[in-house]
Image (cartoon, rainbow, N blue to C red):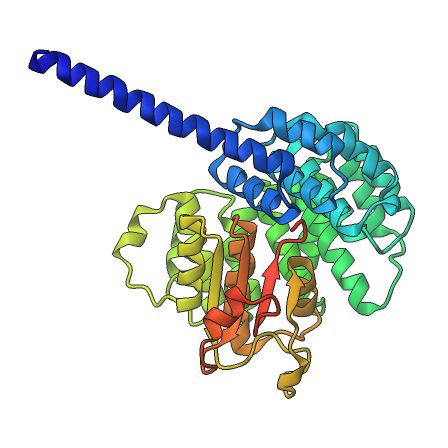
Length: 400
């Protein structure tokens, strides 16, 4: 056999060997989907989602129809939401028609799925959930309308906002924020004047003012950039950061000037929003600035870009504490919405806010879990990641 024929023979053998390995790998994965334990299937589905691998979609859809495992179904829903695949629209509508017949985690997964798929039949069902006046799914229903809604849904939310909101002061505050954010996402022009009035009202709750400011930017009516630039002059960092966030929905020299100024702000929250605006608006002049960047914000940004599975923050406390004075009040596992509620209630504040802000941003960008642990505890990283109970606080998405 001459030298050229030998090369061809080796190439053919190598190709056949690699094809055999690939086939074996595919067979092994299908075996996991057919016969694997619940945790093995969930891990594989998560891997397929992260790699955007659609090779096994037929197997997954068959598995979804026959499995009784809630965790498996939810992991498949999460994958199909990420892929924006409408295969399970009928199931999602079935759950929304009567969510009280399903586990809360399943309903959360369905809301996340619907927000990506946007089936037109979902909006009336979501409004019916809100009409039921149940607190259980209210916040998720409002956020979902903001993602999938039409002009009719915007009108519904305007009436909802202007109606009597039940609950204590904290609950009413959260509901108002959620509805205002949803109306901003829907770009509802009907609430523009009301939101401008709220944003400029110094007697209004600062969280509500900040929400109105962000919504103004989302709606994007002409002249809003000048209004937001004026609000950037306030002494309150929450309003300044909201103004920068709102300005990222506009363009022009006024916007650029404010964003560049915000990069030098004394408060980390404002600088973080400015960095987000720089990225979104592609402001070239920002490259000439000298930045003072919060390390927690930088870590969150890296985790987001790398699409890391986990982001771990080292702190001088065990994690998130229900009572900052009591280290035994550690909250071991929290969902994203629960953390946002704790921030709104003032339970989380001070030096912990940069870590939490980074953790929430990373979760919303696709990082699977974030952790806060005590750096002084020996082997804390290993104990948090490789034991069932952990030693700090883990934060996960609502649909996880």
